[in-house]
Image (cartoon, rainbow, N blue to C red):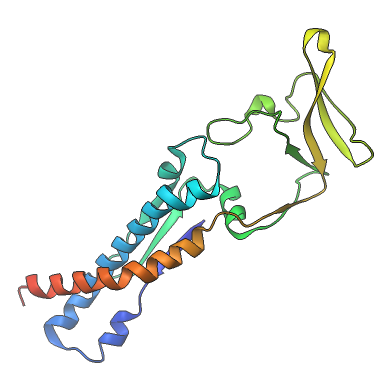
Length: 201
């Protein structure tokens, strides 16, 4: 997932300014874009992500989200998920998750997750010890697991579904837009004034 920050401010202001100031536009715009991108990343890590999910690994968001900076020739910056977790995009946009096979295995609370919130390899349906598929009270199929002394106890591990509706819960794009609208004008104003003030002409 990613969001890009760019600006048409140069084409707009370029009509009204000349000379030194016009030459500083690309530098100022690139700096403003980059500052805004880092604001978006910071807001995502500190607010958007922890407000959207139960955080098990506090370092995940900081490790995942990165900034690809703009420069004077390429006035586009982006904040992106370098780990390319498809579930993040799905949580940000919502939609329907479909299985690669016949069913999706939806884990219950009986399946412990890793610090990153994922199901570990040993706990996945195919690898789960003492597990079997059976009817779920006439509501489809499920994966159960035997446990306890001599495997006399049963617990529901996974519910099998042909598809799953994923709600939109990660407001990455909405928050990024809000941050951009709030912060970019201020960053540009400061960057442009600094570029003109420090230029050698």
